[in-house]
Image (cartoon, rainbow, N blue to C red; front, side, top):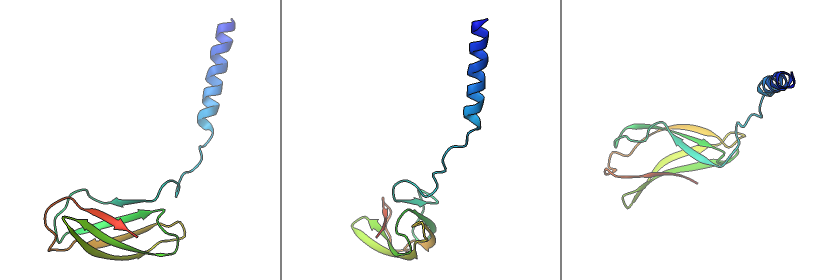
Length: 103
C-alpha cells in the first residue's frame, strides 16, 4: 500500500514539474556571431547574425583569414545587441579558412 502511494505521489510531482514553464533565455548568454552556412565560395551571399553584440551601436564586420582582411560592412545592434545583415563575400578572397569579426 505504501509503495502504491509513493508511486502515485511521485507521478503527481513529476506531472506538476513538467507543467511549470521554464525561464525564457532569449537574448541571454555570451556575444556570438552566427552564419547561415559554414562553407561557401568567394562572391557568394552570406547572412550574418549577431547576438548580444552591442546594444544600439554600430558594429563593423570584417572577413579575416589567409593573411588578408576584407570589410563586410556595418550593422546597428537593436536594443538587445542583435542584428542580421546580408553581405556579398569578396570575389578576390582566396580559398581557405576565414573568421567573421565584429567590432
